Image (cartoon, rainbow, N blue to C red; front, side, top):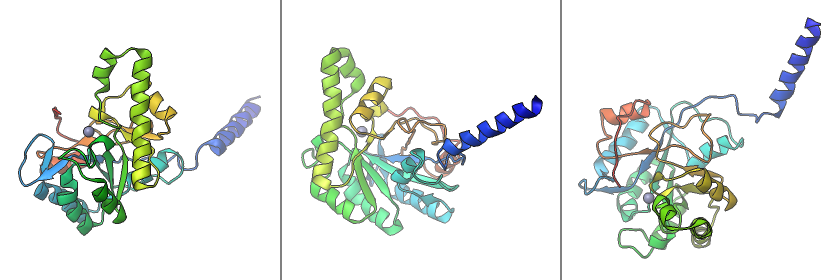
Length: 264
Ligand SMILES: [Zn+2]
């Protein structure tokens, strides 16, 4: 009886293993580093001085870190790529600020690191602070930059939710997600299926809408590493500020980040 039971269990375990994705067993912890703006001085809470940014890149290189494309990490969550190696790091930027072109690009070229930009198309070639479509195309041409979606005009979905009724809210959310993806794909080519939530605001309703409109991964601003147990539709990112330099940057990479309240 016992032996039979054991056999049943063993067979079940084998069956279970055969249906699991090939790469699921490996463990990893990858920090996604989120930047916004660069400059000579700390103009606002979201600016990191260009020398501090460069010091981050130098630290990664000198200390054996590998910067992997965000897509590679997402592919792993989707069972399409092996787990990231130890000391893997991802670099992203939100808002497509013009200082990405003037300050981040030269540093990134020197280091050859992959970067994913989350842009909201209403600002591109329009707002003074943002890059132009031409500049985004130039970034893409380097082969180092991928451009993904940050909605169409960066709405605050928490505020919109208080103002709008069910169908009107649905309409706004779906338009923001669809229009951004379509515009980025038309202007820049390639596939846009990753989304960074404006202000990090998300919930099951919004994540459901992102799935319905063709996104396969979305990103928050939870201040911690990604781990195998995180859902791919809710991956955390570290919103970096200028004080995240030197020892604070090292602690952050090691998973002991200083707590911060970042005001937008
Ligand atoms: Zn943003």
